[in-house]
Length: 128
Image 1 (cartoon, helix red, strand yellow):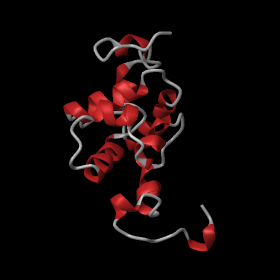
Image 2 (image 1 turned 90 degrees about the vertical axis):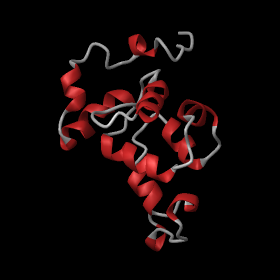
Image 3 (image 1 turned 120 degrees about the horizontal axis):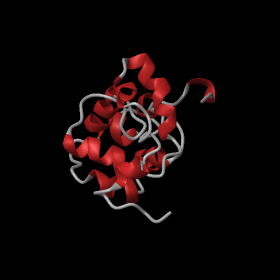
Image 4 (image 1 turned 45 degrees about the vertical axis):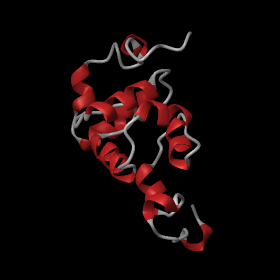
């Protein structure tokens, strides 16, 4: 499949045939429904749109609304999300591009990306 452009990505989304109400479920259900996103070919387009347009509710690009708020707070200077998600060498951007749960809370909290946490804490006993 060719790379979809930013204006027509929705038709390629894995969730397109899904009832849209399920993407706007409560927090516990959001974590389950977002699994469909992790191997979606347009996941980064979806996430970028949600971040750029301030989507406050639902699952977008594999992140829940709470995870997107954490991401936005960790990158207050960022305004060009599509470009950053697609090309940045930032460890957080690379993590978000991986086809799996980015575990954004743990990633930022454990000091794996000190730029955002401001601490130098390491995982206890070297256990991830």
